[in-house]
Each structure stands twice: as structure tokens, then as C-alpha cells.
Image (tube, helix red, strand yellow):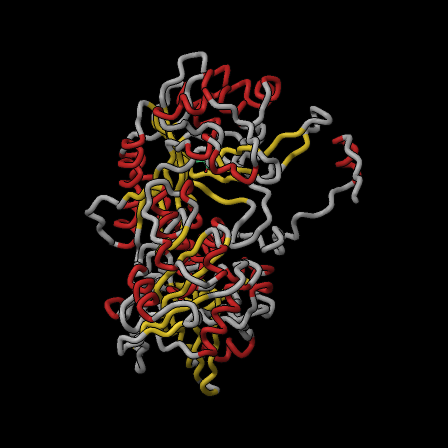
Length: 608
Ligand code: ASP
């Protein structure tokens, strides 16, 4: 046995025990020729070792260095100067014998909570970064989340069933990673973008409750904190309706919050239709930790049928608003005293290419009840007041207005809302607001191909009442500019997303389970019979052998952990993540392979 206790374990109640610890040298402090302190660290904590008396000579003969692996035996004593910051801070070990189990090169950065290592360096030496408290805590949290999920799913009769990694393409909207097959020259496996078709086949096989905490692979450009391989809590159930799924998985997330954060969610989660979310927040994953609802002053009628037309509020001489398809306002609380510099800066912010607006109009709702605007020339104060009121602004608020094409303007206003909320401190990392977003459109318009693509994936079922709309209408889009008027644009799916603090943490759907409807769906997406057979013949075939009604959901496990852990970055919650170019800089992957490997695969490189 290398140790009797861990470095996080000993307390005053252990005083006078003889113990042996093993760990890494965090720091060594030489106080005098006769006294030295060493902080010994392991996964559990830090314990102070006191080297004094005879042992000091031995220490002089075999000096220690940072990150040396040390075994030390001694007696637990009460410290004279205590450290209230660590749980072992009341005691120290008076060392009587020690062994250096291994030396360490000088680490490239300090292995402490506040490290001096930059991102790249820490990625290259990830195995050292993982020794740091902050990173270790994240991985422990990740384990707590997975354990809680497994317990809940186990208690609810789910079976954890593995599905293969070497498969045929699963369409989740990304590019596949492919793996050449040596035994089948010229043929390739794809790595699963998700176990979607397999979990559906398991339902056909009668395993009515399936789950897996599983790696998925998507070859996407790694904008915005994505990883080429990531983990899902993947689930599927049969003989269920949407309501059953929502209840079951609302339960899962509540259980995780209870187990991991001690938070009791007693109320059912709010539910919002996709249309409501887009209308109110400009976004299908609204952050509802704060209000700041959008005010739709002008919009194309067919995009939100039945919503009130209040465009008369902005009617007047202002050409920008008159010409715009859409005008949306959002009120930023308490910002009426923004200076010229600040409003100029915000204007620049909305003009950035990522936001893509031409300008920003604002109305200051001054504390004294007056209104001041960048478009004073065009609107009377009464008009400004009416617009501000419609936007829900109070005295002291700043109303921000964007105008332009519908989709872009809605997205930009949504981004502006989030940006203002961040600036105002409304997006608190320790506040958790969950909701379901329901009734997504079944199809999404692909501008490049002037065709429909599946918004979720092609196995998602339409709302039963709209199956006829799908079957009886031709998917061809005659007039690209007016695609929103095509009947397919308003077909809704039996699909749902769970949203946490403005992030989609889970998504799923009730599936199509009849061959005929699945074929119709593939056809609507532009797949002819031959392609359907080639790509999904196995699934269509399985649907002929008693496929039960089924549905499921998958949670983005890395993201869920990062939000619960109060961090923006999923990388912090993955033991060995890739960088923004999809590289593992520690093991240096991807990398070239030997000529021999190419020969075996009968593949010739043809780099362009
Ligand atoms: N396979 C889907 C996804 O990865 C989830 C699901 O529909 O269950 O998003």
C-alpha cells in the first residue's frame, strides 16, 4: 500500500496518528536550514508536510522539485498557523520518512487554480492541466451528471444498449467523418452523427426504453464552442406520445438538478411553441432568465398569421422603416442615459458582419417623462412615446429598434437582446431557467438548393393533422422569394427541444413509423426511390415488420455539464478536447499515415 490516507482527508481528529501519504509536490517552502514545508497534492486535496529535525538532511541530499511524486510517512500534528482556506488546514504531517517515487521535469505552467499557462500550452499538456483543481472539479461534475442520469433512467426501466461506431451515414445535418474499410477496398464506414437509426431499430426490436451516453461525430466547422466528437444522453421509447416523452425527460433533468445542484424544480417546465419563441424572443432557444420581450412593429403577415398588426405606430416619413420588411424593438432597462459614445458603439455592434444590420434606431425614455430619439425628425414625441409603450419600456429605459429583411432582423434583434442582457448582468450563470420549445416547423428552406431539408431529421413525424398537407402538396418550390408561402413552410413537426438559459440542451421528436409516410418524407427531401433504398433500405424494410409508434430525445451532455458548471466552454468539461481547428494538440492528431497504410487500404492521396 502506497498510502494510508489521501491528501484531502486528515483533520484535527486524526492528530497523533501515523500516516503515509502519496501525491505530487505542489510547492516547497524552505523556511530555514532546519525547517521546510511541502504542500502535497492529490485528487482529493492538499496536505502540508513539515520537514524538520533529522529528515532535513535527507531532504538536502535528495532535493524535491515541483510535481515530483512523493511518498511521505509521519505523524499528524495540529498546525501552529492554520490555513482556513483548505479542509486540511488545521493539521500537518511531521515527516519521519519519505521516498521520491518519481521525479518530474519542470512543468510548463503552474499547476494551481490561477495558472500562468495560456490555452494552447494547457491543451498541449492537458494531462498536467487535468491535475488542476478547476479542471478536476469540472470532470467530477460531469461524472455526477452522468451518474444521476443513469440512476434515473435505470429506475425508469431504460436499458443501456451500445450501438456501433462504424456505420453508414446518419443524417443529422452535418458532414460525416468517414473511415476506409481495408477488407472492403473502396468502401467507407461513416462515424455516427448520432445513433438515431439504431435506436429506432431497437424500438422495432421491442426494447421499449433505450438509452446510451454515447459519442457522436460531426465534421462541422468548429465555430462557437463545438467539438467534432461530443457526447449525448441518447434516449428512445416506444408506445409513447409527445406528452409521455416530455414528462419522462423533464423528470430526468429535474433529477439531475436535484442530485448535482440541490435544486428542487417542483413546477412543470414552461412550454412555448416555436412560433411564440420566434415572435417573442426572435430565437428558438430563448433565454428566459430575463424579460426584454421583442416588440414586433412590422412583419410580413404570412410569417406570423393572426398576430396583431401595429405598424401604424411607426407610419410616417421615415423611409428606413417604410421600406423595411420587418421592424422590431427591444427595450433595455435602465439605459436611457446612454451617452452618444455608447449608442455609437452599439450601432457599430449591430453593423458587425455577424449581426449584419445597416443601423440602429433608439428612443431614450428619460426619467422626466420626455422622449429623445435618433429619429426625432420623423416622429413627434407622442409617437415616440407610443412606440416605447408598445415595446414595454418604462421611464429610464432605452428602446432599440432594428429594421430590414425579416429573418436577418429577427435574428439580429435576438442577438441584441442577449448582448444587452449580458451587459446588464441579467445572464447569471448560477440561475437556471428551463423550458420546452414545441411545434417546430417540419421543414427548413435550403436557399442554395431551393429545396426543403428536414429541420430536425428525416425521421421526425409531422403533426398528424398535417400529414395530408405533406402528402397532397408538391414539394417543388416555384417561387424561391416566396418560399414561406409554400404549404410545406407551415407544416409543424411533433418535435421538441429542451432549452436551458438560452441553449438547446436536448432535442427530439416523435418518429415516423410507417414505411409509406417515411418514403413520402424522403421524397419531399428530394430523394428518389433508388437513393432511399440505398441509404435507408434497412430502416424502410424494418418498418414492414411491426414497427411500434415511438419517439425519443438526445441531450447534449457536454453542454449540459458546462451550463450546470456555470461555464461558457464545453471544452472545460471534456477530459481531452480538441482545439478550434479540430486538432488534439497533445497527441498531435489528425496526422499523416504511413504509405503502407495507404497501400493496405488501396487509397492514393490526391491533395489539392
Ligand atoms: N438524433 C437526434 C439528434 O442527435 C436526437 C433525437 O431525435 O432523438 O439531435
